[in-house]
Length: 504
Image (tube, rainbow, N blue to C red; front, side, top):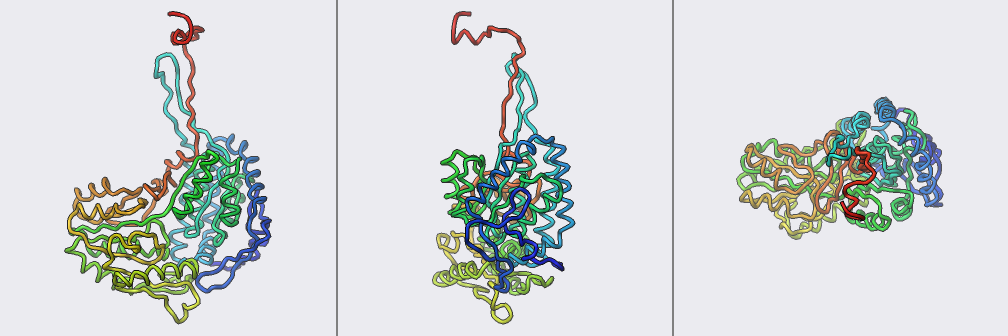
């Protein structure tokens, strides 16, 4: 894996992909992609400036008439080829994703890459199913039907935690619906987004349909969102940055899709399968080293199970193996950067003043001392209104709190500004149904936490944003709904005209 894959050679042309070609940025400022497991630089490139954004938008605008005018079958065929190219390059994608993010290779190989291939295959099929309301004579005199049309050039911004999957989530529904796109990946993790666009070109998707600009948010990102020729913005990232994106987008009356932060509750009722809940809590809180907006972060455990849950989660966390991301036995890789590791550690250190760190709460030394590693951490005894319970930490940290009544458990789950994902653990059908109705989140799992499907929508409530990624529901973001009405009477003077002039 990664054999013969040399990053600096692969992207020697630069980290901008515009009109089907790699090119260097024009900002005059350079940036380094760093392997967070070792602190070593793996790629150095010039950041995009506003001129690069303008060129990418122009390329997307030029490609729009041809791509939007292609038949659904033609777009579908091209995207099926795209999925095949991605599958054939799976090893390279997994290697590059682990290299730039520090993900364990088993996560890249078994989750990120196959999930992206599946997303691509799903949208290849979905491209042929852009449905509107059936034609009918709703008033008797006219035939009405609904068209779904591509909206134009989309400007999207993706985060660093799942660079490949987030590129796919932004690009695929947009282009399946006939739009063209300019994607700005995070400047610290651009590699697989660039490879994704290159694979599209190799599959025969026309130049300019998918463009990548890799630059800083203040420069390339804000210019992209505010660009007059961009008709829609889709952003995934923090709620704070999402508010700034919304300010810029709404000032130019753009369509807006936001997938923002999360603080997912993990509610364990007293009839739950304790072993299943413990395994689910450790997996759900540590996936991607906790750098997942749907990760389990707040475990609420009904009091009869609370002590056993704390004991067993701590014991299981202590078995998790930190190590080289490219070692197949590694369970947990580093955080994305030393700065992020220090941010997570600071949350835990401040919590020591009012809570108990049951396990973890430190960076390992030894062979891992140069990487941005942090041990799996369980915190107990924090108050509901404390920082560590209410704020998004984005690291391998789980906070556990007890509750007594079902009413209290659901109320605590909802007591946060966020509403992206949640889970409830119970053998009782009525409890499960109540949890799915009353927990305010875009996804509620029962007796599991984390699985996602291409066929199902992903998006949040409240401060977690609005709009959906994945599934056919995502087409609501990327299509314009047009009502078309035909007169069937062939009468020159309509009855309703009398309300404007003359008599019946």
